[in-house]
Length: 275
Image 1 (cartoon, rainbow, N blue to C red):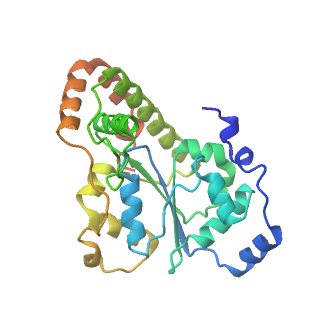
Image 2: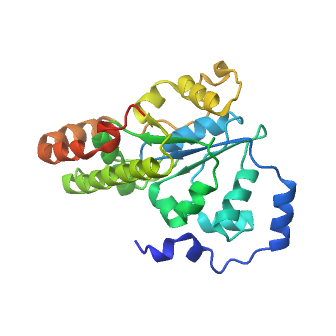
């Protein structure tokens, strides 16, 4: 990855903006009443969670606005090429009508965007959630399958839906990548916003209403949870099947030593699960 090319300031360097229009919008559009940040890793349920929260129209639209892959388009939409202003107008435009703003980001996104700017743009009352997945083997296999088949979500139509060939080396590489990203997220939050809450994939997908209730309480939003008890049409579902389970069993048996080392080094699992 070309780090310098993926930094926010380099991505938007040549973007032409209407500065007067930007200033007018900042004056006319109110800040969000409350905000939250979800820090996540790949295949941790973040897209499902975004869909769930956005679907209420009461709990923000927590998209990956500062993912380097999306920043240029978002900056064009916001009419802004300055990092602080980017977050200022983003939070105004993408809040729900009741004044709630949410955003999803990884440590690498925040680092390339600018940690100082990012964390200083959110007040002390902003809630931070650290989304992780207990079963990191299943997570790595899910990521390997998604990257290999190029099918990331259940609502995507692709020609080849067959699972990939089992490849222990590739799965191990993705697992190591996820473990590193997970620790990077945890360390970043501990250093910059230590009053964060850990939430795990296995818990949130098991209890959708409990998940909505948790975010509603954190944002001070009153809502009828029963309205959202049934999945909406087109809501994401798991792609995993028997192949994923068989691949997990095989990988656990073949790479037991590697897994023991990885599990021993996971900060959120060993030191932060109760935060």
